[in-house]
Image 1 (cartoon, one colour):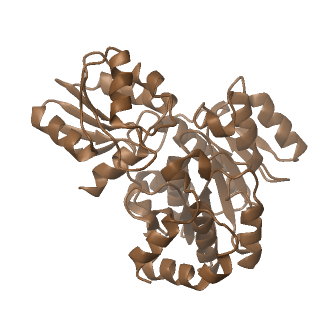
Image 2 (image 1 turned 30 degrees about the vertical axis):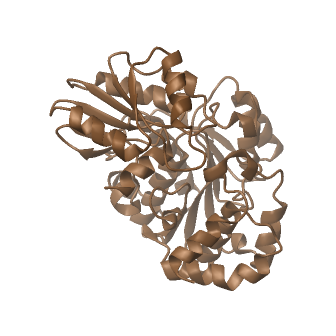
Image 3 (image 1 turned 45 degrees about the vertical axis):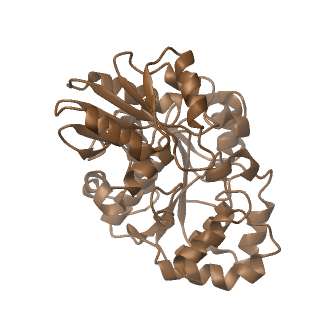
Length: 409
């Protein structure tokens, strides 16, 4: 098999959440447990930090990984989804897993896995954990795919658990209240394993305290700690302040556990996070004059902060290129759009995309003036053509809109 044939095979493996949504969600961890047994328990072969949360878990995972890299630790990083290349999901010291390792793993395991009905995400987790063990990483930072309790990554017993915050995203899978969603994400809290909660919220704090008490897990609320200043970082999204605080508190706790993380390692980890981990799509400036910014924020909580930051920018016109997937509350998101913005609607190139005709109808229902395009590239081209040097173009609404944009750059 070539690498591309291997990817085609993986993408065909039973429902893939990123592509089709709810049909991919399994009701228990039995498949993952069976998978780990077949692979001879790779999840026990390396130390880990487990990161969940509605927003910010990707940025936080990359920041923590960058700090460990600065401290000289061989650092694994597992995140999802990817933007351009599947291998972005699995890195050691910022380097993607080699193509031949992906192909070799799939070819060698295909026959044994054929009767197990593994999903794409389970295959990915198995590959990542097997790779981290075989490469003898000192630590792996593992981002939850969705939720926590039933996520395939939740077979780890980590050094530290992190839950960034709780919002209403994925409510059709995780529950229709913030409390129910918190209950699912709290499923990563393990016996005697400390947990850092990024944001204390009235609806969730009691839930986290109760579960951590039951698990004898020390609990730390990061927003109860107020650093005088944050280290410098190329991550310029206003929403990153909360992730910075969560990361700082997590790093301090890990230091207390015996990890050699100095103040210099932490500050350098913040400053070099993009260089160390190749993080992309977080308030990323792709062009100046006109300024083109993209961001993977994709729910009301994240996009509220994005729109406020865009409104505060010095500029002439604001051009918004937006597309969505079909399981988001898009009507609520559209109410956030500034009335003076010039709106370009588009459809990301995945089966789970919100079809452009439906998005146009929702925008019309909100009395939003707009033009519409069948793909991201056409919408971006139109925005570029209509812009002058003093304008700002923002591209987002979905991780997959950003993925389509970056794939053409």
